[in-house]
Image (cartoon, rainbow, N blue to C red; front, side, top):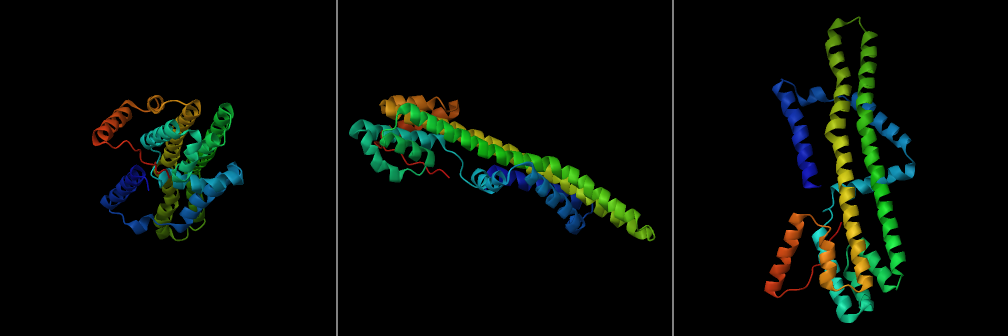
Length: 274
């Protein structure tokens, strides 16, 4: 899992557990299968109702790529495209066909295939833009799903609490059971509010952020493919792609170029995108 996501969840849930312990509570006191079923089962069903099933089925794949992959690597993307530009300059555009099997990044591979096939540059850019738009739509659907869960769980938590209190009021013959019954009823509210603010809404924001990062790199790839088709020199192409980097990333890229030049190694590693 993404380190920041894992660390954040551990800190957030750990803080709740420690606070509960300091108050004299135990883990068993916070367990209520019926409350969990109402909150999470009800919220899941309502979230599925909110969007088409085909979009819901994509959510697990997007989550896996966003939270469990290594993330996008703009520096490696520039390295790969710079290496391809050198191959095209030395041996011609058609020589890039032999490079297809070595490219692990799917977006670079698709763009390179269009170049090798002799596709018109305008058509190539149009295809790549369509892919970026489709990517954004898929990611937006996953983020909306978690945003919906974040909005639904507190409401379902209150619903579960009301249901618990109703059942308690129907059985007032034994006053000794009222305390535990009320405590159990309020667990539904706890589940709803805690899960919304500690899990669902933060994950929705993480998905949006990862989507923006990937779209940014995809646009970098699109610019690199455009440069390959235009016959840009490797130096010009790399400098164009550096414009997509933050100042810190640009300094790292320039430092790496200097290190490679001093070491006599001008080869660029292939990006290992998830």
